Image 1 (cartoon, rainbow, N blue to C red):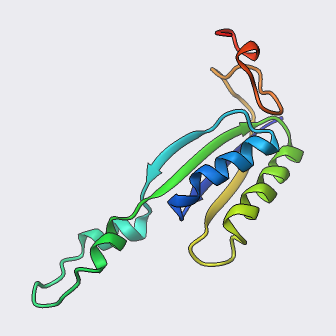
Image 2: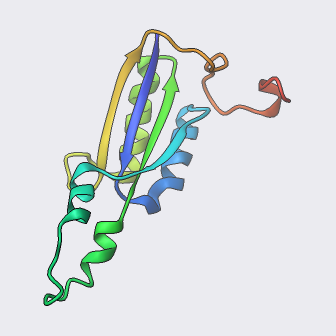
Length: 127
């Protein structure tokens, strides 16, 4: 069975460490999207009167997340990925860590045979 792992990473500075941890756990590829959640999107639209000094609020409202998607081939790898990610970002029950979800995917098209572990050029059609 194939599984999709989705991670919304709150601390964008931890992206490289998360990617390294996933790679070491056996993930051979992931899609990374810059994203913004509902709360931040709505906060950007709130009109703040100019008579108040909210300059320091600007960077917080403009901040984004990274959302990562990775397909893995078994539930054991899902668990290893969760452990690897939590080793980098901490416990997801703590604030400002992010959101992680995983679910089974019955149909997958357009992805070469999923492999466990790092891939080399020899593992792809291009290599």
